[in-house]
Image (tube, rainbow, N blue to C red; front, side, top):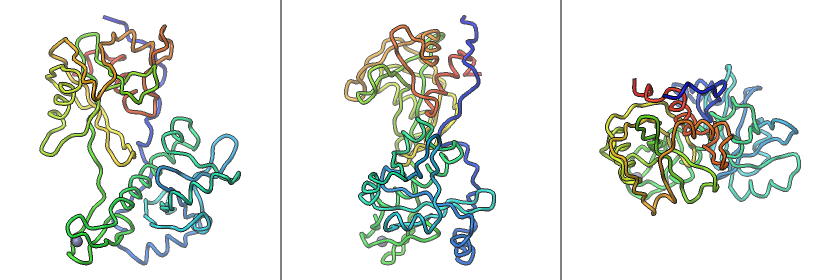
Length: 317
Ligand SMILES: [Zn+2]
């Protein structure tokens, strides 16, 4: 059995551990919302499609605008109330993706996607959870302008936390799609796969959407069996992460592999194979002899793999 490797202090998971008080009870309080919109410390995140607008700076950029500054960036299609940070309201403003695209020429601004912002540490870490909240919620509005029940135009209500249909009276709530992401383990080794879209050196956990009528445990076993032909027994929940691409929650698990032969589903994966714990430790430390890598610390896959490298089969205790 390998000694517990020293991987240093645990890195921060991206988009998780929000410090915002969502103040859900105030979403229908028009007087409170009006006060918030005029609050001297009101902060606005400006997002258009996949792009976030930042105030350009050397070192960390500032993703917060005043409401007036944000309105000057372009037409605001939707405004959502995200919550309170130390009593100061935070909002998300949805701008047209094309209008944001046009802001790229301004050198007082930086336009970037939320993955790059997290991976490259472009903003202070405390901004990542509310940015994820804003992006997922504004993206939901952009894709749900019409009632799925009757086809009429829907209206934003409850400060952005519901859309109502004036024709059939249906109420629609923002969705978040559950994705299971897991590491199948047998003794000192586990299975990693490579998606076709990964950089050539990267290997990661398997993942897939949970389907209607399925428990998390069932989704984990099905996905592992479908993607790599390995049967799994015990499934142990590890941690979860909001993943605003466009609006998922990643449910991280470890699973006990019961069979040995990897049969790769080439529709889903470029490749998959067993990895020894020692090899994974080298990948996490970026010291692998062939230069193989694991996902960056902002992604939950990094933490799922790291937990196995540190604890071995104790992950099932
Ligand atoms: Zn309707």
